[in-house]
Image (tube, rainbow, N blue to C red; front, side, top):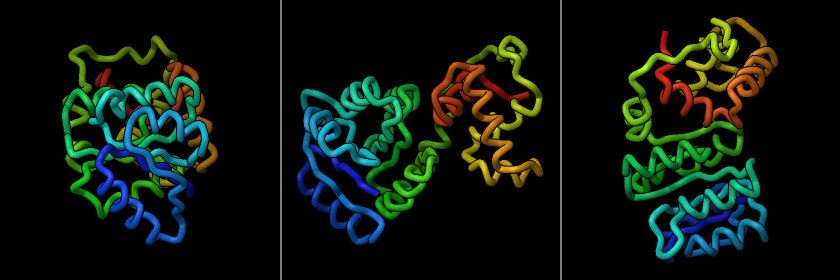
Length: 209
């Protein structure tokens, strides 16, 4: 797994490099210290995952991520920050970031990277508890408008809860491939790109029966 680290604190960058490369599955391809570095190095290194701070001088991590996702919609971006700022969390979720962790949770960084590399989205415990409150709307969503079936509603809810395709398959007594097909169909119906956007959509529209 090739990881690009971006943080405006050089000591943090070096510490992260040490932590990550202690795992034999992770290779830190490059390091940068600004949003501008993130854009340049992402194009050059084409990493599997971009691990990036949010608050940086001139171009923030959020702005850099937005620019990167504009030319590479499949970019896997994991934010690592000191701040659990509500506005940052909402923006990160809406743009399609694969995760949002607090630096204090340093023990969870390597597992989070591996989860993101495997196609999952990862949000620290403190962040997960905030998401429903931050994104909930007052109006109930109309499933029928998008031709969403009852089975698909259930799968949407389980995706939002953070379950993997395998876990959903086991819970619903279906094949993993079947779940994958259901999710692809739901994404197409709703005009969404990935599981992260689906989870955001769920909470934003209060998708609970």
